[in-house]
Image 1 (cartoon, rainbow, N blue to C red):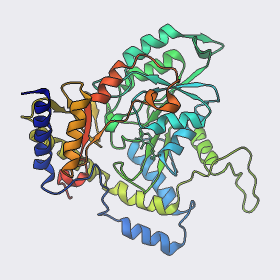
Image 2: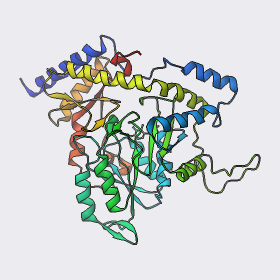
Image 3: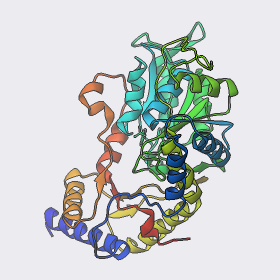
Image 4: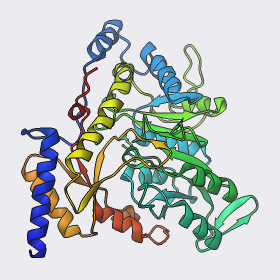
Amino acid sequence: MSGEAISLSLGRQVVKAIRTVSGPSSAALHEPEFNGNEWRYLKECLDSTFVSSVGRYVDRFEADLAAYTGAGFAVAVVNGTAALHIALKLGGVEPGDEVLIPALTFVATANAVSYCGAIPHFVEIDARTMGMDAVKLDEYLAGMTTFRNGKRINRTTGNVIRAIVPMHTFGHPSDLNALISIARRFGLVLIEDAAESLGSFFQGRHTGTFGLAGILSFNGNKIITTGGGGAILTNDRELAKRARHLTTTSKVPHRWIYEHNEVGYNYRLPNLNAALGCAQLEQLPRLLKAKRNLFKKYKAAFKNVSGVRLVAEPAHCTSNYWLQTLCLEHSDTIQRDLILRISNDEGLMTRPVWKALHRLPMYENCPRMGLDVAKDVEARHINIPSSAKLGGITK
Ligand SMILES: *Cc1c(COP(=O)(O)O)cnc(C)c1O
């Protein structure tokens, strides 16, 4: 067969394998479901007239999130990007600082760094986890940085490297042990972008709780949704207090006086969204079961399709399997794009991973290490329909 015929044949096999799981109709990449107390809590919320940023569902959602993740404190905010913006500020990220982030992540990770006036510094990817490569990062930092006046300095740019922000791609945890050890040795603040990994654990501990702070997202396509929403997780009481202050326009609490003691943000999550979040969080254990079951179904469906494999959770991790991912045997964007076209033509929503961030115009001049693996991972991976309902667990 010619190269094109092989590609076509693989594309058709991928469609067939997805169809054995998804059935004959079209399938979205990720649909939310509202089969629990969503309507009831929303109605209660409307009936109470507390629809905005004060209300008992906000308090309950924060308490429930802290209890589920094991974080000391959770602060609910309007979205995951806002959560990351504030978490970076809590970490002391200042204008002109550099922040280490993976080259392959949703653009929000880099945008939050930019909102602080800081500079994203792109880190190579580990093909096994699709997250930061700790081994290469360690070597890189040892070679190109120096420690001066208690600060880690990039010797090329002269800037302070303040923080490191691992991201757990599609719910699969990065190598947190190694990354924590890098943060310690190089004097960096660790902040986790756990936007995709609610329900994912590294060695039994919830992602987002390892560093100074972590963040979650409850956007419509995430494992649970509040419409739009996010949360900051931290074990530090003072930081949680500061996060609450900054996200509430830095208002000094008083019964009637408007007093604000620094530039703050209107980032608090409305009670309506929190009500949805409380109901969604009740469903999380079932959703996680469904997602794991979906992985098993796809695993069986793709068993005899050569040329692709299904991405499984890394060792010592429990992944939430937020987005199911195929890895192509060959790094070939023509092959990848053909599979994307054939499946989308068939009504099966499949997606490539993000374009590596250093290839976006606003980030093309940012500092970065060698990113060959990031490029390779970008060329080889495809997300396939991942809605929990395809996992077939209704209770
Ligand atoms: C979803 C997401 C965010 C932020 O999400 P919002 O849409 O702002 O809630 C941040 N980082 C990553 C990696 C994400 O996937």
